[in-house]
Length: 185
Image (cartoon, helix red, strand yellow):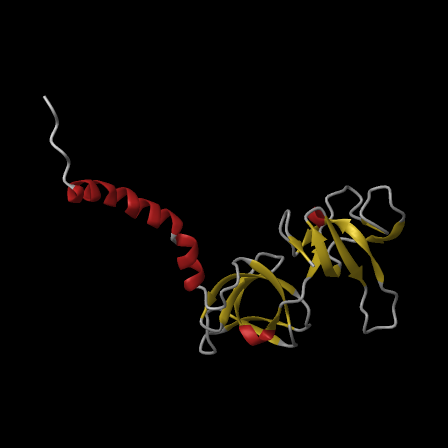
């Protein structure tokens, strides 16, 4: 006995749930960026642009001031965006809101030593055998020039002061202000 030929519409209706599932699986990243006003990835690291900067408890000037940054160039992580406001987290884990105009895309970070003596070697090139340029203490702010996923090129010291500035390379996992395996230049 032969089977009747299936109606093309019936076959299409059977495929629709699978097609809908496929679209749903592929759509969330696009929707996430559509809901993100800047279109830039979240989370991401930036620095404060000016001084002083009021950090607020909510996204707008009507919200109370939680604290104030007194220096520029402080690395922060953007966690969320709402219109022109950015929810940030600092190295201490404190969170608050800053207007986008008060943030810059330049990168800086803090030395986060994991060794017993608390110092990190700043090396002359991307090798553990490279010559030592300086020893950096915990919490020292550095400017991050580039990272390759393993090593970051940084400079330590204040270029606006007459003090010495050291440049070199350090392991990426010894910095707060970059993600593991992140690559940028």
